[in-house]
Image 1 (cartoon, one colour):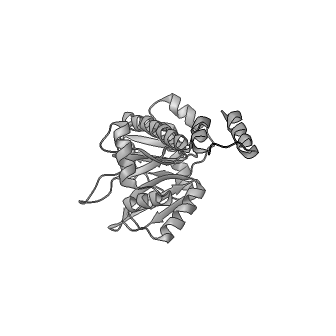
Image 2 (tube, one colour):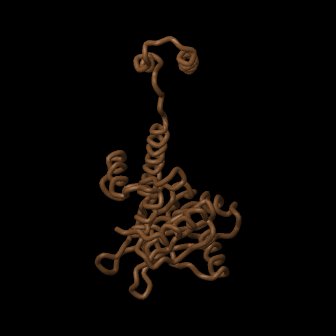
Image 3 (cartoon, helix red, strand yellow):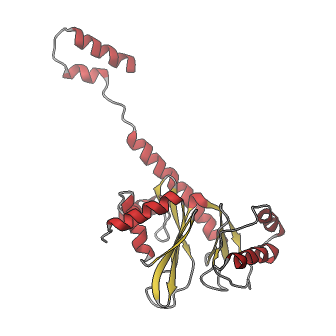
Length: 250
């Protein structure tokens, strides 16, 4: 899949803003992706799979090999969580049902930006992104009745009192809500337990990523006795100084 330089430039800007999630969307039959950052949201006409490849290309990573490694590491064959950077670990989340064959149903959330996953009560009235007033009204309604327990209501009510908005793309079908640290809420068709397991997998994948990255940077260097074998059998001041430095490093 060819990735043009403009796509890389756009991704760099989104990453600078702090990437939260990528969600598939359909408008008048046209496939696209909503990109959420800490600074706002962007509608991109390209598919989510194309954009994920563009993200991997930005980090000079081969997505197929990356998924293969973390599939083996996590022991899962589908819905694989994978890190692209220490601050960007993508977890797959089902956000909608396909109306036609080939439509994307899986979005990706950034592990490092997730605050919690909450249960969505059956029968919850659907709503989507709207104006500021509509979003504030939706926030109040969620706090009043949507969350599973009074404790979760109380916890949310102690927040900032305003939210960047909500994304519920399949009305009446969501089973859980992903709550982000900045207040954004995304609906998911996955059960809360499923998403909690993916959060755990994401943390494991990130630790593996850090281990491989930091381990690859470690190089113990040559040992003094190995260097001695390479030097000519002669006595000189420079040789003595060199060997003295190696001795201090051991």
